[in-house]
Image (cartoon, rainbow, N blue to C red; front, side, top):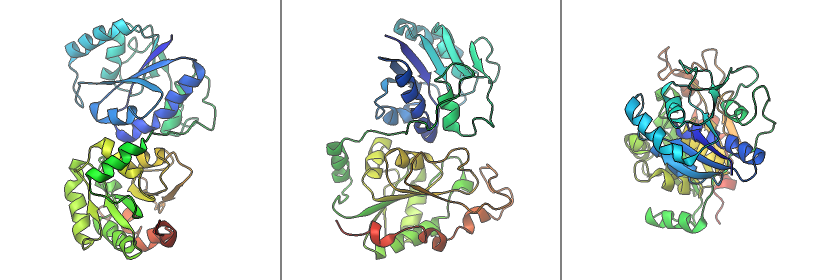
Length: 340
């Protein structure tokens, strides 16, 4: 049986964008076994991908070289006898474990000082492959062969009994129509729609009879609390009160998610949850949600996208001028909030 080790991305959203690659690999190699070496926080997503045999937690923090530890992990993985490694990050250190594991074919893009570590080094044509998902997917094919379009969709598995158990644990009513607001974006403030705008949107959903759940990580607990307070109690702040696994169940339970360009936006898309995606400093021309049921809202200002963590001009017009009225115009409140 052929087996492949994939070295996965560090970001939640990028992990979702890697799933079409895994699907293409399975379609190309019958009976293929795929293991993914990835940061622990991404494992709940990998465990919901049927293409993944085993999700292996990477013990290395961001920026840590730990050459000896990487060598020891590589030696431990030699027993698996992988036929190929596909390294998605472009860093030097991400290619070390497959090299130390003695995997004969090590595929990835030319990156920082990786000659020899990557022996199937591809040169990235950014014009031919403008989307990150396409760049990942191209590594499923031999060099020079473009990925077939359209790419297979990202789809995360949801067990209904577990989903309902999560809602019970969080004291959320599954019978009431609900929406999710995702105000965070770990990359930086320039990707975040203002908290007061999310609060105003929450009030509008509440007035139509919808429950409103604020979803995010522990790092976004204060932001979620701010939205909840500004909304006058029109929403329930779940930021920091759920694991990522539970957040996935929550996003699978709502009729609509409204999200910045963030990891949770990509998770909602991969669940098939209808989505309104808000873009400011980033671009859907690089990392769009992988969903046919996503409405992308952006202003296309001359200064946008800048791809900066903070607004370099200080005015933040790409999000400030994307007002609650503009976003509300894209939402069918009566349909979404219609009682069950």
